[in-house]
Image 1 (cartoon, rainbow, N blue to C red):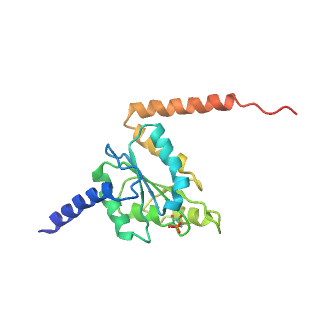
Image 2: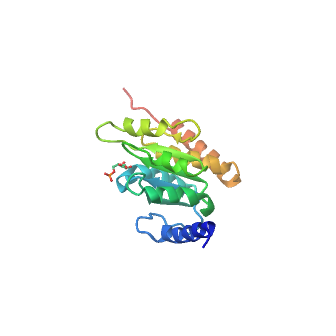
Image 3: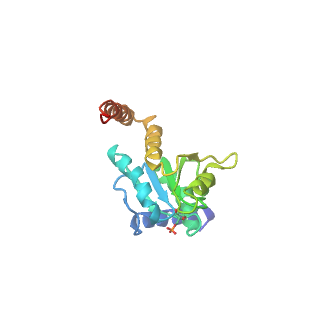
Length: 189
Ligand code: RP5
């Protein structure tokens, strides 16, 4: 087997494994447009906000636990073949020494959207600094601490560049938000 067929065989086996492994929260029926990756299942209460937004916009996604430190090979392989699997953007959430988004970005030119997870000791500032301070040449778009919903909306904006349905859905979403704000009432004093 030459080098490239070894890589192809590995990629095929990996693609199969991706859809079979437990912990693949949303095994995609359709090709996933967005990958939601997080360093631990403890990140899910934050990262599910991204999943809920993508579901609301009917964007196919997958959600998986992959750790930059504890499953480094998987992180690399996920990023390497994401584009060939139809993934157009990856939302990566991690807490503490949060290298996941940067490691994924090192192995793909797909847009990587980093979500700093709040932490007990440093309240997510550690996660924020770890994700936002990428070296020149390997960008990660960094969102607010716990900002998974905005990361998903940003991913949808990227997809909407070539998708009229999503472009219109984003406008509708903004209009709905406007209506909600206009309908707010303050208590009387
Ligand atoms: C990070 O370590 C994860 O992203 C998570 O935010 C944090 C703690 O992980 P667990 O100890 O809960 O698995 O890698």
